[in-house]
Length: 357
Length: 237
Image (cartoon, rainbow over all chains, first blue to last red; front, top):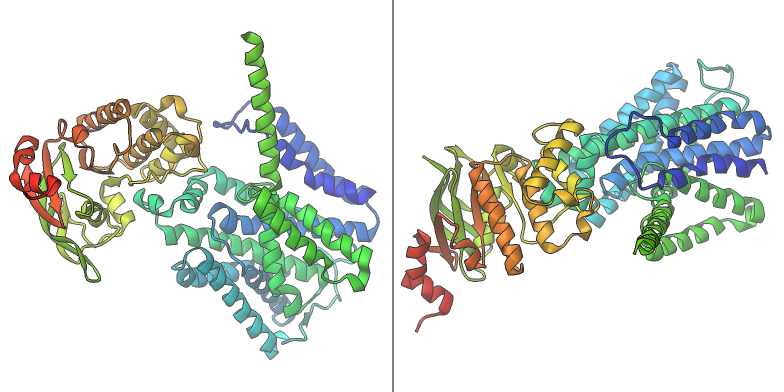
């Protein structure tokens, strides 16, 4: 049951971070929770040494990649509260930009991936400029429309392989070309990218940007009265989110060495990114990681159980999950943990008070 | 010299004229009450000054700088703080974080913002609720929290929209004390209010609107004896 250990490694953080004792002042003293983080990170780094089965390694990579996308989506959808259902557009833009630069322009893959991220961020500014005039559901619908348009463009663009897609030739291997025969390097790439995206999220959360994003989500009118330009900060969130989503797309392209509109620009991808975040806990640092673990296991699990005949089973489970989250746990798995924790703490303090009396 | 000058401001929404040719002035460090019956156009006047609804015609000046046509965020930077009829606190944040959002306009450093936010919470007597979630505070506390948040942008003029409505007498007294303390800081307050017992004793001047037009302004005592004002509130004989 090595796979379960993998997911546990990625799945533990929320329980820990559920502690409401998030210090208002960054504590200089060493806290036990940092030790836990180091242990989790160490386990995550060591997974490929214990998990040797390529299909299990692949599952771990899929979870990390889904988590990275959820964390990226969370910046605009979670913190800033602007639900984008068109993030597949940025994922695809990243994948296509890096792949085209590598195969057609024979550019260095590291630079190509960076270029894909920057292009996606740039395009997000153009999309945001027009779409952020819309509020709530209308913004979500506009993002769907934009993603559809980009999907249609790539399906019909001959130079980009049209509906057939693009293949990255596997003639060379190694870190300079980012192509590997084994799964381990991809595991570390996915883990590294996830950590980088988390770091970006953490820095945003701790800085004034995080406060501004949450203010915009809570009460846009009040935010304006405090000198916050809604369009400016929504665009910053959107651009950062798009940048990391695009890099996730490039990583997918390097891992699969083949992309087509159906695999990187599919509407279902956009929904999955949102769902990973919403399921785990919207607007929280580690929520998307929990969500990614749960969703990827459902996806791969149904695939294993039902094989080809069970196509769409995961969608049925997704749908049921959405209903359950919306009705019972709007704050996601992480929020549920926090509530449980807070309730227990309240009970304890009440009991303690009772004893005093 | 006047801090705020409203000159012949008219605001129309389609065929409805919410404000018609309204002019008034207020000086630095003054408390001015903007009163009038329901639907008199008080909140619209507020929105014109704070940039939420630019006037159809007429101009608004803050310290001899024309601010009519500014966006709300530009108005905030120009020195106008405001509260809303419903407090509109950021409910996912604690009281301290709410005020910090405002303080970031002055200083982007988290530690500095936290420090000045804590001071402002003490200023409005909410110091002990620093870590309480805004969503779980009472209406009165949320209103004062909104005042602290607006003060965090270091305004020259604070617009308060019905800060006393729906409060019990003790809470009204608390709020009045806060308003007086704000004036001591040299910040002018323009207050839209229904609770006349709250505003009349502390205001330096009162502006009365009725059906979008200014029908009177002056010292509270003069205004409350003005037959036009009495007619507007109690109806004609």
